[in-house]
Image (cartoon, rainbow, N blue to C red; front, top):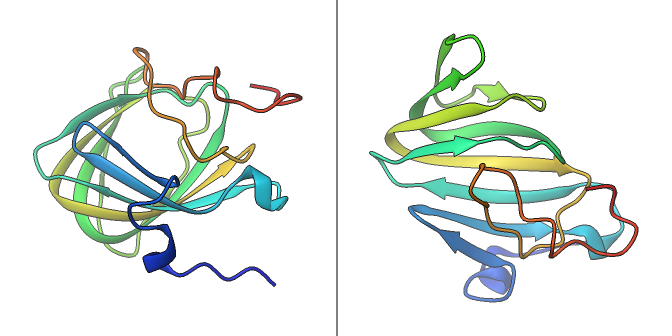
Length: 133
């Protein structure tokens, strides 16, 4: 049984921060689950251009609100507490209206240290051998 407490992760190697976001990664690739799970927070007013071309992502909104725009179609979705979304491999923009708190699951599992590169995907240079990304 794997149990991770938030205080064990906070300020450790699996507490990853970027420009206005923070991901505390509870489960990562090394745990052998086949997926990773993080608590992610994003500051209000942030706009993030994302494209998880190497991963599938599913998110559940705990608190806050945002608009997600599908960049290929221009369709805008408003999300808030209790909503879940999975963008597939679509390029999308997240515009945070109120401080956002999410539970995010990735497949393949993240190693724990990924940050976004210029196109909004995760850098693959930190992947483990055998990673399809």
